[in-house]
Image (tube, rainbow, N blue to C red; front, top):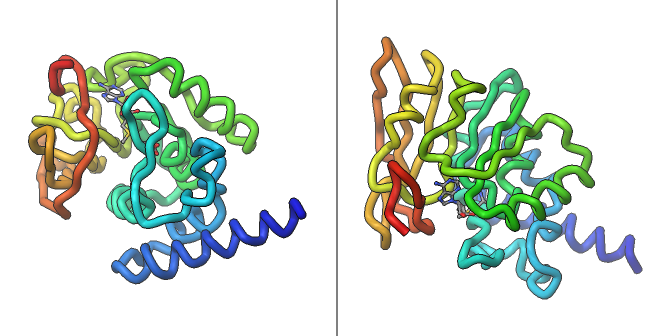
Length: 219
Ligand code: SAM
């Protein structure tokens, strides 16, 4: 029975990758493979498990969400990870995106405002065997100075601007992906730091919960 259930989840993941992610143009094979592998259903409440592979975000508590699978894939692909990077993630949330990053990079530094969410994510990630993640509770708009510079930075909440400390803590040649806009809608922005300057381009319109902090929205 348990094995049958695991098979069903595996099939659901395969369909998710084909119909939601590859079909919308994601081609990075490492990203696709990580999304086929990671058991997304473990990162949502047991009452929502049958919806874990649906084409939408889901609530995770504290008014927060686990992002839609396609958006996770899009943001991850934009980071251009090859396995050697030190990555900063702002907004641990459920820990699902953290797991994808831990599969694809050397080390992940993840910051979350809510201790409860991060504790839960930490437990799941540990049980899944990830040992290349450092956790911090606090205001991610300030970055993680002691661990910088980062080869890649991902912000999984909508920001009014790109927080200056994050630009500062990005390595030369590093990539940042962040939703920028107002509290109702944002544009996913990708920035690459060259010659100490961030060069940005817009990817897609998105809708994220608010990034709250010194360089984010007020509570
Ligand atoms: N990546 C997450 C996942 O896969 O479940 C989704 C994250 S959810 C859309 C956004 C998260 O950002 C929330 O958990 C929220 O508490 C967190 N957040 C908002 N502002 C923050 C800040 N200044 N520092 C750290 N985390 C923040």
